[in-house]
Structure formats: structure tokens, C-alpha cells
Image 1 (spheres, helix red, strand yellow):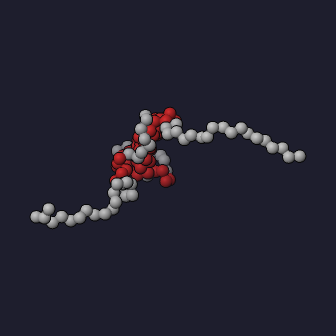
Image 2 (image 1 turned 30 degrees about the horizontal axis):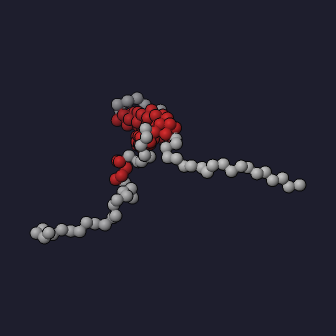
Image 3 (image 1 turned 180 degrees about the horizontal axis):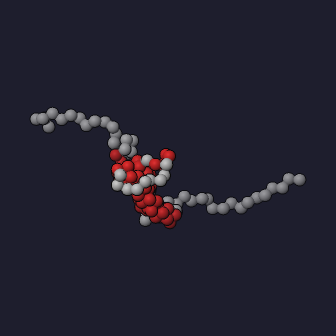
Length: 120
């Protein structure tokens, strides 16, 4: 016996922009304290290396101040991006990251022609 199940055709899926703005704003708000924690651990380790603070009790890979401050920067940039998207803007990277190679959309990579003095 062969049983065929037929499902009714529903309406086609629509891809709407900005459907997860509330979730984006919530994650952006949670990333701000996480980046602050990473900054504080990084500066604590740096102050500990300079002898200005007490002993830093984290050992291993996570005992380097460069890692904590870098993680804080990454989390902060992600929080800025998600909060901007959650407030109704476009999902874009911060303008600081436009200086990275390969990120400029308008730059063709060609040099401007050299202008000689006296010629128009």
C-alpha cells in the first residue's frame, strides 16, 4: 500500500530586512559589559607587569594583556555594530575598519595621474 500525503501550498517565504533587530539590540547590550570586563582584565595584567597592581591569577594563554585588550576591542566593535543595527540602521562595520586593505568599495587601486607644475 502506498500512502501519499499532500500538504497545501502556503505563501512563499519573504525575506524582510531587519527582522532580528530586537535580538541584535539585546546581544549588543550584553556585549558592552563583556568588553568592559576584557578591558579591565587586560589593564590589570598590564598594571601587574609594571608592578602597579597585585598578582594576576590567570595563567596560560589567557595571561597576556595583549589578548585581553584585543578581545575587548573586538567585543566593543561587535557591540557597536549590533546596537547600530538594532536601532534601525544598516548592518555595517565601524568606519575605523574601512582603513583595512580590501575594505574600500570605491577605491579602484589605480594611482592618480602625476600633474606637472605649470600645465593645466
